[in-house]
Length: 288
Image (tube, rainbow, N blue to C red; front, top):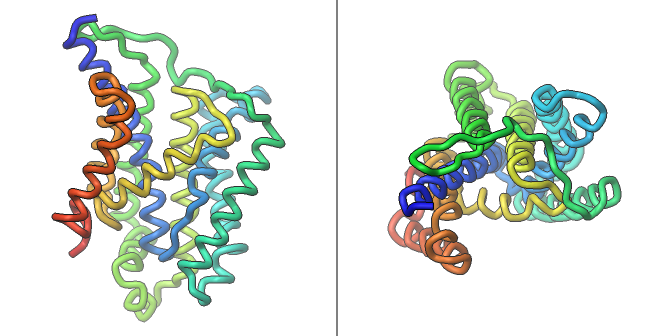
């Protein structure tokens, strides 16, 4: 394979990974901005979304309908988590409570997945089988479908936040929770909506990743870390910042291992985070 083809293939793989990271980061930043909590079990929601599709496909449902059902199920699960676990502790040191609750939830969900599906890796059907060639580089079609799904999800989220009353209320609550409450915006509704949307996005990201790669009960740990790094890079509450941060991390993970090795790929995001914190403590596009 020529150098140009190798670069092109690495870039496309990096962009596909980046968009999956963006979906994770969007859910995390919505929950953190509106609920004021750090949902450390978000990676397990990502994992559950993939396994829900695996189960539904095994029962005879088509891949794309299974993805839609998985997103709805995990959104409902998110609402249940918000009402049953996070809301009752919202008034008692919510940050510490959320860390304790979500850490316990991480262990429970991962262990439940091991019991239900076993430790062995499993595969989902291809989003679109086959590949095509660009400038000598072989590009799997499923990467392009994953990118397309992610972009559509981002556009729908952006339209929801900017064009609907509920979305505008969520933006107002994220910017000033007390002020939005005085305007009659129900914070409980905002929290449920944020958790539902965040969990649905995580389920979509997990399914897309599982179709491209493989699925297993501990698959959510690394994407969760990437999502947190993206929030630091892009800035809390910034959708454009999450997109930029996710694509930067994805390109690093796609390109650096090919040309610099795994060690360089592991160090590069940390170096970038340190530099951003030094010169832009609120992130690239964070609110000043």
